[in-house]
Image (cartoon, rainbow, N blue to C red; front, side, top):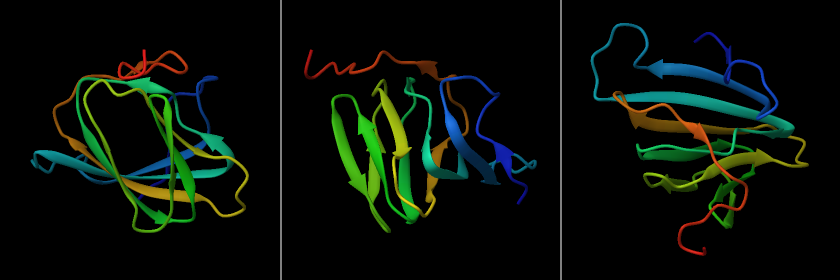
Length: 123
């Protein structure tokens, strides 16, 4: 699988690569399976969207930020991201990359940047 940048380069993310395993080579599944890897000090965009997805950690350790909660993740841990949940994945100071699979609907809306500390439950 070819390694790609997580997104077009901007200041909303750092040190993240992406590989697509299912869904971008002419298959017709209802889902896409992607693998992301975050290097030490890296993070994904803090974003939200209408679609849900599931993240499964398979390498190293990291953090999942869901609204106002931070969840430590290690091998085998699973996080469900509900529709409109502001979320971000981080590898703050760990030496090993934080790698995870992301299972997402094939047909989905585009993510949009979320406000820091946005949490509809807490606010």
